Image 1 (cartoon, rainbow, N blue to C red):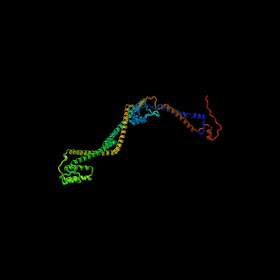
Image 2: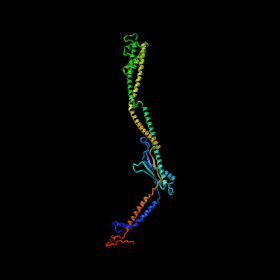
Image 3: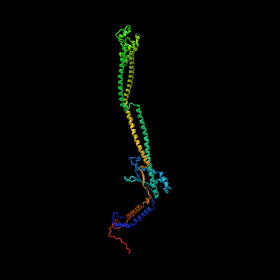
Image 4: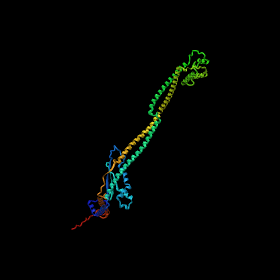
Length: 488
């Protein structure tokens, strides 16, 4: 083109089109013919699809909660990996004799990979259409692709049921194993609590009020025993005084024939040695008196020392006493029996008082140890309650998992259900003949126009006066129009 800046009019475009018509027609025809030939001779590929509905759980979730809570997309990926495994696809290829021509020059791995590419699992793109998906298969035989598509749908449904049941069983087994461990731990803590209560029986926090009441009763009982003991001791002294009065004659009446020792004893400071009494009675009386004093005073007390001295003097003057025996007197024997009973009662009261004192000490110790036992029991009970709560939660979950497992075994859970099985395709999926033809026509037209444009750009001939003026630099004075021959 000599003048690129030139602006063309419609007649000039028509002139260019007439001048370059074959540059447009020939590429157009060639490309269109090639496209039509490819569309008619290309290998026909068919596609069959099965529509699978994701059916919700048949039992309301308010009654039974499913343990399989993964999304459909996630489960489809797992199921697809299982269904499209090498073992499964090799079985299908062998069973339906697929890719017989390709198997001559390709390995089994390549055939399996080819079949994986021909399997199409499509999910809906819209959020409100998540309740279904399609499984398709692409091949050169309409009947075969239909059969394979339905077979793949069956495999997806079976694998979904197996996967859900497997997950439900796995969940149940896991919860049951955890439940056994939790039960063993709970039993161990219960045994520890029982052993602790058995070891520290009487010192437990819940027994503190009882211990305090028993302690109060023991203290009252000990007080009564002390009062009874004092009364018995006073009664003993009174009986001893009565016996002494019976054994001792009147101190104002002189007794003939008394030795000097007896007179000294009667008139001396040892008032406990009675005149006219026998040695045995005097010794018995002084011994009882000394024992009575020892119960009230220490060994260094003057009364105790005086009583011991009188008993020692009695031993020294043993031969100075006559053999008179007042113990044959009934009154004397009665007092002696009362004295013996009183001694027995005193001993009994002392033993009871000692036993009650020991019990008071034990209950005091129990009450003092109660706070420590309460702290230990609180720690044990906290651990026990925590373990018990965990066990009860696991027990509830285990029961729910067992129900969910039964739900899956009876196929009452979420399922894949074919609602539109694959049908034999009437038209090939590929190639798309109308589309190829349209593309061929458009491509041919575009190629022709491009060829005409390039040829026009490369043309250096003169087509009007402006081309001559630009090229030669001369002014054109006149032009001769084109004369078309007319056929007569």
